[in-house]
Image 1 (cartoon, rainbow, N blue to C red):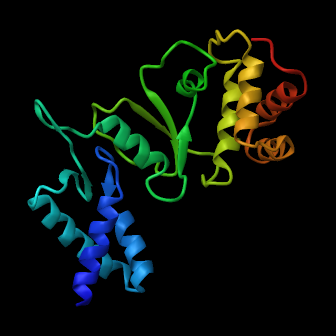
Image 2 (cartoon, rainbow, N blue to C red):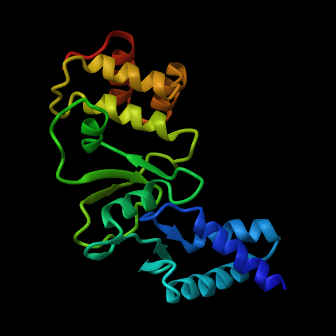
Length: 218
């Protein structure tokens, strides 16, 4: 009877995902272990078995080891999961906790500081040792400290400000772009300076403080 409860729980988790969104076995197993107070390894085995069964029933489609998705039917057959988007999510926020963020220079285009699009996305991540397939246009970088929900926007903004002197910026008013970032994510400027002093070089910290106080001519 309990096995039925596990299977129903797993199916409910799968049903909660949007189509063409990565469904990672490990994440479901972690939640199930907490929900039913069972050992994580046991939960993982149950999830793996049930996910394979759902794939055999064409409820989900296998994408990579321990990763599935719910496809949609198109005139050309089943939809295919975007590998670029999958690895971006896997490196930044694969579960409930942020473990990475988009870094420079690619983030400058994302936030609107430049119209120039980088050939590859820069991802600063706790999984900086991960080896990606050759056809994935992502550059992995080691973080200055372990990234989490509380610090990633501060580290990202510090990197952005430092990059204003390194890369071309063609936004009409770059200062306003940064100000919007601060307001949108509730950045505490004093906390940002504290991060800079602790984890960035003296020269980088000066750049960050100078910008916050005066702005940078770019």
